[in-house]
Amino acid sequence: AMKIVDNAKVQGRGHMIQNEIALLRSLEHPRLIQLFRSHHTDTHVYLLMELVTGGDLFDAITQNGRFTEPSAACMIRDISQALEYIHSKSIAHRDIKPENLLVQRHGNGSLNLKLADFGLAMVVTEPVFTVCGTPTYVAPEILAETGYGVGVDVWAMDVILFVLLGGFPPFRSPDRNQEELFRLIQKGEVHFLSPYWDNVSEGAKAVVRALLEVSPKRRLTASQTLQHGWLQHAIAQKDHKGAIKATDSMAERRNQQKLSGQVESAENKSDSHKPEMLAEKYHAAQTYKNILNYDSDINACDRDQQIQEIHNMTSNQQNASHAEDTTTMNKQYTTDQHKPEKPAQQEDTDTKQE
Image 1 (spheres, rainbow, N blue to C red):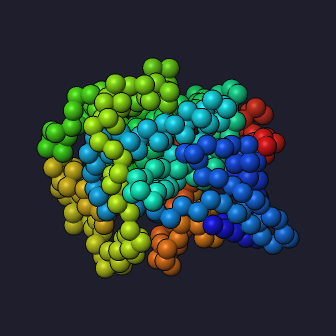
Image 2 (cartoon, one colour):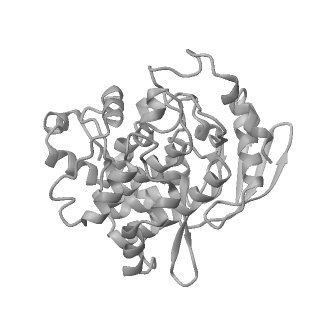
């Protein structure tokens, strides 16, 4: 698989590509996407990467809605293994979300997840203050701007677990208001709405609470998650085979639904504050992308629009869909433009890690 970067479209942000290359060269783990070779010209950067043909976790969620506890546990195991590895090297990914988790399909029918897109990843040796990520998955300590570490990845992983089990995100604004969303995240109150969580075990809910802990010091680590009784018991209940069903037509159907107007409309907003309406909306696959990745909340500095992704693309529609996704937040609280970055947190230093 080939990832092609147009240098003209990433002027001023080329260090993000160099950062990704440097980190991927230093990492090797079965739960991470592998970089085989990179080649630079005056106009482009070419990355020869591992081919993963099963789409991404976002596509799987869009198709399935919710997953059984054994299936969700197997996916969280894969993510935790990836995070345990990079965190052992003091690397924070900083953009954990379903679109960055690729589905690897094996010949025997079993499936695994692979973590991809290390453009925002960095070596963390002391608290970081840079505000980045995707709003739905951003950790409260990032918003508080008090300094953060690798724990932000675990928070994002648990948001994914909540979505896998319940079908919608743990923190959401009915009016899709970013300020309200951030307040809810920082408050950290988790509610398991009925009937969507009625059949989910108390063990699974306990893991969700332990991972969605506002205090990073009290939050479970990736290693602790792997050792949790619920995870081990749920995995033992069912093999991962068939847990994720990804097809080549998923992204195409998703775009067709968008184009046909099957998205959340202003007429729906009057009742959107009701829990039952909230849950029903978040279960609807055709609105899932609008709800989980607020396009209006993202910085116009869109790296995915500037990079031609060839790997894991099965159609032009799929390419167009992924180009809409972004990685840095447009946030009034402030970015580095409003507040000088401390020298120790300069992301350019990441490019030195080989």
